Length: 483
Ligand SMILES: Nc1ncnc2c1ncn2[C@@H]1O[C@H](COP(=O)(O)OP(=O)(O)OP(=O)(O)O)[C@@H](O)[C@H]1O
Image 1 (tube, rainbow, N blue to C red):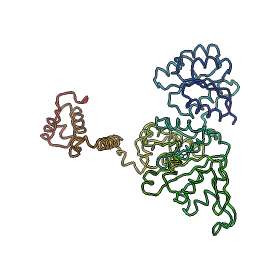
Image 2: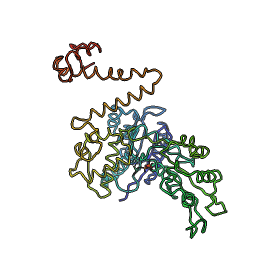
Image 3: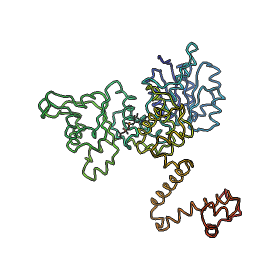
Image 4: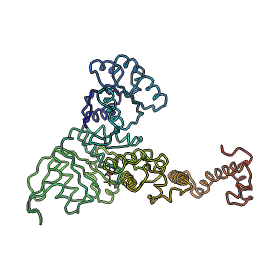
């Protein structure tokens, strides 16, 4: 399928955002120009004559939306995409009112933006119909997520794609560390060169050096011919050192030497060879802890950790779960499985789970559901059937238990973290004092203030209820729901 390409003018005063958008759209074959203000936009429009204008609202010299209607009056064929960090309904309405083609609240998803550009180009070209929902092809942008945590990751990526600084990607297993490494490689100038990944945990320890640096014929038993190492294979491109915390000490020393000298000597070899490779390392371990235990070299850590990128666990960005879940359903459909959708309630339920296996676990689950669910839409009851964590999701009574448990967990952690300020012997009473009045008040309100029925519903003696009401200073006659 051929994609329509054209000229895109991007207006944003944040160079990192300009860079990310520009790189992504250039990869799709568009010609992109970026400017940072309304004045520059005014200047660039007649000269560059873009097909699509992507503009921020809050610009240093004014409101980027104000002139849009006037611009469109001059250039009725121009398609305008508005980006705004304000995220208010008002901005969205104004954007539409000014005749913008699309409005994307910041933080936006790059996939969505490139989709909007594709659509804008299709609409411009009257001869070809707009392309229906994308989802195939290699030009899809890999990282999904609109949460503030992921926007921070995108911004850091944007800052490092153009240089060769060593990157250390940190995060639990399955959070997307390798995907980030691939994104840095494929958005940067090394993109046409190899991306080579090696996982230290997946290779027998005694073979790691040979794998990484290569070996000469006869270097050890079984070395029947010379073999190129990963460094050599990655020449000109990027080497991704996954699970770096599992690297044996000897290999660490050798790696450090390579990073210091820019030269590799194969196992059994004598002649060092210059290498030009960008290093991105990743780990789910706490390297400072390993250093303290004498299992990781501190000097290597500093070499690798020039720019750290910490990937949030999925539970820290639960808001991204529905987006990712639907992405994986689409992905499964592109892979030949039946296309499934996700009900809003089911998506909400997924947000409540802890995701110890992070994005990988969600991806696998979506694949499983695609295969196992007969209905076209995946509903709450389907999740309850397949998920082993269904019991913890509050059963048929709903999801409130999980919310409450989560809230209690956060509260307890918070209190324990405060430490000095809290008398630990009071912690239990303190939590009860938060929860119990709410329960009593709500029950009384539901029973119209009838203490006998409230006590029965709560499963407690009426006198006990009375005592508690006095203790918490609750007036049973008051409208209690507002408590
Ligand atoms: N933000 C994301 N958007 C879309 N897919 C993602 C995202 N993050 C991770 N994935 C997908 O989840 C799976 C796991 O990601 P990846 O292998 O990059 O994680 P990892 O952190 O390197 O895991 P490990 O530490 O176990 O090696 C991959 O299939 C990847 O494509």
